[in-house]
Image 1: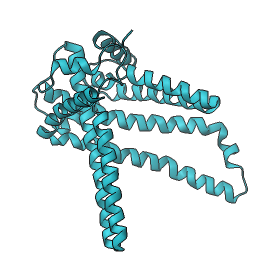
Image 2: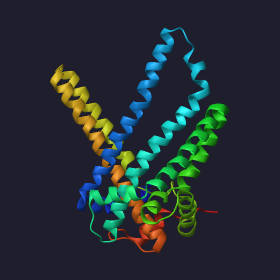
Image 3: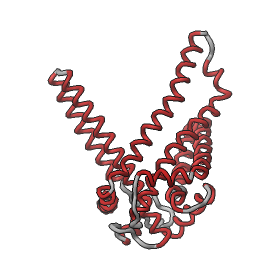
Image 4: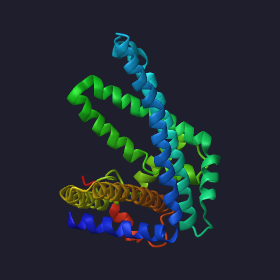
Length: 286
């Protein structure tokens, strides 16, 4: 565990060095979060209104919606994935530009993502289909379904880990991008992608610390019985979590860009130690 934490911390520091030199990368996860909230609201609010209306009219809303529920869910998945992948592509594209020593800007990231719109939509379509199928399996098979979905979801995450950097860097379609991701991962690191590294370990601990600090702040404000103190404490805690989320998303985009460059060319990017990248995805033990 100590070795994994040390490796994750080193990878996070290397990614953070890139983020410190180009803080505009934070714009992409910020806008992505705002857009995904708008998408969620655009789906959930009408559904809530329909549920209330159906209840008042004495109708069985669940039965009435059962035929179209999966279609609605698929549409939601598709739009959400499209928004998320669009901003991820823009972020990763700018990160790749930075790692290659090219001029970077937010506008350049959006221009790159716009040029990949058909591929992004195609990959969102694939991701939404996979998400819906996994959801159906989970609902129909109960506990066994959850176990199966957990395994399949992990396998899908591993297989598609480098899809976004590939979409940002190579002029290939979504299916070829998935195949290319699998090819690069097999060539470089084997199968144990998730368990052996990444900055998630570090941010998991930071989130725990943030929750503890937040609980202390809010608890202290409540003890003071001051509305102003409570509002201020809650605001600070919420902003802290938002900032952590933005930084984590940015670092993950930078991290995936560096890993893609290493997998594709066998060379570490500036600030990333080659031995560290190799260890982060050690081959699965037989």
